[in-house]
Structures are given as structure tokens and as C-alpha cells.
Length: 106
Image (cartoon, rainbow, N blue to C red; front, side, top):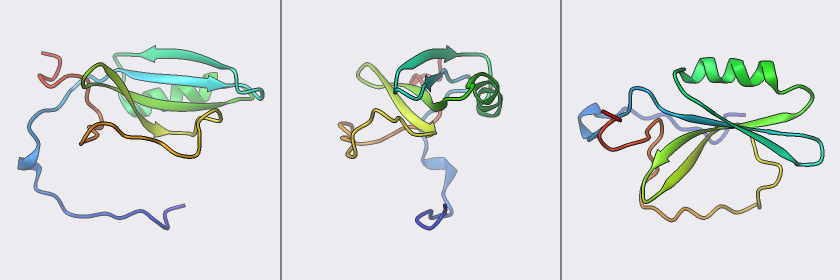
């Protein structure tokens, strides 16, 4: 459902860093909410989604990208955690998608 989605033009010069090879986490959930977690490297997001779809079985999954910002953080890219509360608290001033380290992991 894209009812709340907004698309806007951006100036790509405003970014200060990026990561060419991010790390991902896939959390598989069974019908009881139990999870089995995996970290994926060396793949792009399309490959990770394909891998998760092939390995989810009858359950569901949540896909995150790992973000290093005052410790490890996760940014949800796809899916929904059946164990999550209805409200989410964001403690940083910015959420950086597709990133793991300010220096690009170089």
C-alpha cells in the first residue's frame, strides 16, 4: 500500500558518506513468534530478499540493514516483526539507510 508514500527530488551532494557493501540481518519468524537470525554480507538488497524468500518456509521474515551509530543499529527495509510493539522509539537524530560505517567500511 503506497497511500502514505511520498517521493521528492533530492540534491545528491548533501550526503557525506555511503557504504558500498552493507551488512544485512534477516530475522525469520515462525507462527509462535520465535525467530532465527542471520547476518548476510557480500550481496545487494535484491539478492538478500531472494535468499530470504527462498529460506523463509511457512514463516515470515524481517530484513534490516546494519548501521553503526553509537553501537549497532538496525534499519528495517522489509517485513514486519510480529513481536514488535505498536510504537517505535528513534533515539538518534537521523536514520541512515544502506550504511554501516561513516567511512564506507574502507
